[in-house]
Length: 348
Image (cartoon, rainbow, N blue to C red):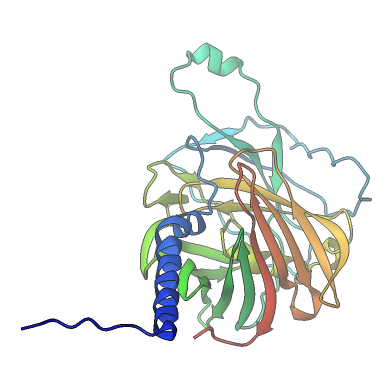
């Protein structure tokens, strides 16, 4: 029996070449680009240690953009900061109040413990400067879905931010991004809504529909644990994760007009799925037009190597939800950009 060969026409060869090229692009996205997208997190080089003390603070006071950073308010009388370890005690949630003035908690910036140092050397080390972590009044938006243009480096696609609060005081928040039909981002935050706004209980990074890394906010135990790292972080009122901060920041700005002027600051403690804990201090840079909308631009910057520089433009007409966001890893890499395209679609 003779086997005859089938000759492909030029048109068929072009289609075959195109199919091979598309397959090659999908393989590249799946095995090369995908890990750098889903792992956009501030994983620490060493477990963070938080020292916490309660302080009283006045209402936020706007300052000029060219003014030096305000001095940290001291507690009176000064009590020694207590170190929160694995057996962190629960922190009581403050009652809801109609006043926009926050009741802050002061957090000393995370530092890496050095177990090999002698106790005397550890005691002689100067303590890091304290920073205030306020608990703000919030006004959360109604349920909705927002479609964004997604860009990171040469790869571009679409993303959907889905916010689903319930009448029972629960919520689900998901940021899903796709490039060339492949899911590149799938971050899911679930939890409750309390007097401090969004109260995450679990933040997970998913790959192919399964949780691969997660942060668990154990509110009864007063601690945050992780699916990978073994260290723990104390759970404080108002703490957010790497996706819930987008809606929480909008809710804070919507509830407090005093925070919308240039120089005002909003500070959030943001937790990553891989064990990172970072203070994100947003400074209002003023009005900045985005697509014909007079958006409010806020910037968070930090000198920490494993932190993320964040620029976000909030829309007053949409409850101060993000019109645009740019997240740039300080240790290198292309920024992750989101630009609002449409409101109300499902992305399905």
